[in-house]
Image (spheres, rainbow over the protein chains, first blue to last red):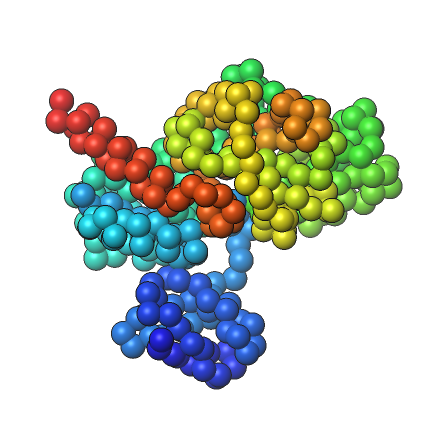
Length: 56
Length: 296
């Protein structure tokens, strides 16, 4: 288990070992939706806003 | 085998697929559509070579990106699933309805108008309740169940005043009385992998809206409809949505939608079938077929 800082609230986010670039996570403290932009070391950024044509 | 995954976000669905592909020893090329630049003769930036992929699976979250990226890949001669033609039909509810009807697949009564006055006439003729849907959209967003004329007038005015031009294509559909649930079937070229019901007290039962999921055994009628609906939109890895018009277990269905970048994590969690393994089985088959076709 690794960890990284939430770019929104600064708290520590616990991360699984099988982390993928592009993966979406929620910060357990502030609830922000985060995207993994690097895995070694892990770096998180705020995930892109929901777009109108997303999802199925 | 080298398999490309076109994506913009790695959801649980994509993680399941990536895990299965790597467990089988495939060379996986993650293709982040946000970094790629598509030239007329090939991907011009992004540090990847898509040309040597045996097959590319489109998992773009955004419909628009799916449509254009798959079109370019097809133009380069890269085998891609789903095909852009399938995406184009599935992404648009008007095209989806027309394709289903043309293939004699039962689908809810649907009419389209381009002004609020004309749409109101359809709604009044359909009677209340009826449903107003965006032509392009997912996860149950911007769906309106219209219960009264005053509600219809309000929603139509809002759409006409606030909406993007696509929201001025008014897609009106009969309200189908369903037994508190609908049925989602994941199918590979028309062959069902697994199915589930999505149940909710709300009229929208989407898993994305919190609908409760449970495994569902397909009967002969549903299996046949899934095959026909899949063929109607051009085949591929699809999510076929059915409603039981005669009540739960009646064996009478209407197909209201076919989805082309189908999410399956909820399905994988409620059925005994290993869904990502079945999808990868099919993907390997598609790559083999593409390789054979290229060798001829």
